[in-house]
Length: 440
Image (cartoon, rainbow, N blue to C red; front, top):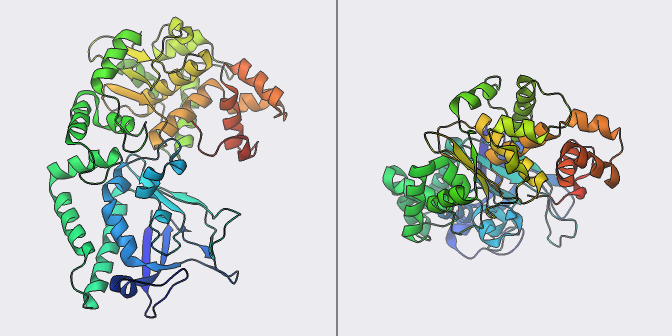
């Protein structure tokens, strides 16, 4: 995948939305084009109605923003409701840079191993002189993003240097960041701090250290997912709390059994993009391997696949923050449910089974969270297809997507009406306005 952050330096001062104030702004005024995998994320329509692929802004401001938010951009995920979270947007949305310029409506965030770049068009009721028209999503690898973002910052620094403007705040910030990146111990601390939604030294040291210890205890990747489950800058669940709740509120399970998971996962091929395709394909393979029909999946069958007693599916014992599975290392583990409703618990169990099949990594904790990472999206797609296969759903509906028909389908397949509606929206059978854009 290719990623380009291309500045074309402009010699004349001035820009579309104000006047420059600092010499670095004037020196680094540029037409900046952002493309990923051939998709232009910076495309706009100007006042004259003409479309173009670049925006005229201060390269210095963008470089400062990238440097300041480096660790959050690379390691903090999209959280539930992130588009309405000013704290999250400040560290991930180019539009938050401001400073008198109009910036593309692009967000940048971690997706586990990759970085997600999303562009959104301007709202229809805009009052700005520019309208951004790109609506795209791409997932370059983390190393590629680091390389291209770092190269852009260096280009800006060279531009400032050649204009004889002397040292700037950006020079100092980049030196500090480069030193942190070259020190493995400091870099690991910053990664954890960033995953929690903090700028450098913004989090209490004990919070970051606890996340580190919990990662050693339950799994680093798992705890990074947990860190994205709450609001940006919040306190994540601790290993101590999750182990206690597993004992008190959990149900015995051999979901983490190596032999069982390996058997179910044996027919799952190399990881696919996007996340929904990976999850759906795996669910279909698991159904075939388990000898299941395309019809509804009964509680007993789901429980047997997941290594949980069927009684756990209909119980109302719950842990409100999150559903998860916790391996004991030796012997049976525990599954903890978040929902008190049978349909919700079935979906959570489907997600946990999907996680065990798709993301086998030897860690003790398997979390299901509200974050928008690749792992969580794949879980949701797996659970939806496992419990309510799309082809079977479509055959049952026979083209009738009314509320009443969807309610009947939800009862038949033992899922929520929201799960049915989400699947139909994702498949293009219903318009997206049937659901909030970024739902649970």
